[in-house]
Length: 105
Image 1: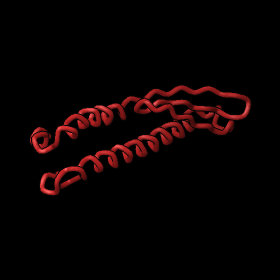
Image 2: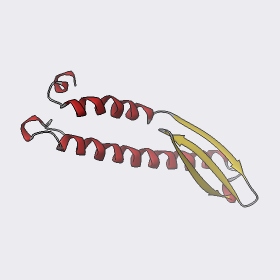
Image 3: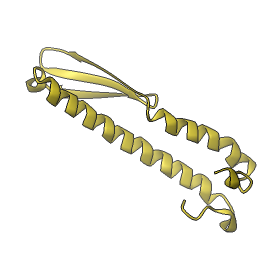
Image 4: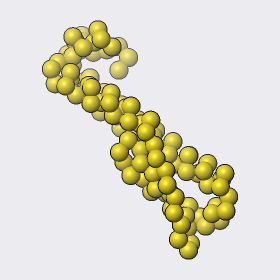
């Protein structure tokens, strides 16, 4: 990655560390759950984004299944955030002159 820094314009060099830092933030996850009379609500934060998942009352007593549902929702949110970040990165790369673009982006 160090070799590419010289090829990037000043604006790209300034944006790249923030983008890389936000990608690391994808690993940070917190989960909490609460319930009301009809449904369980799981609230979790991924990469600084608050997500809320409403779950059927039927899962309330089934801890393992509830954890799987929450994990699946979190993974789906991570995929969406990753997709958004890749689009953002590709837009930045498109601004580079054709001969300076990395081959894999």
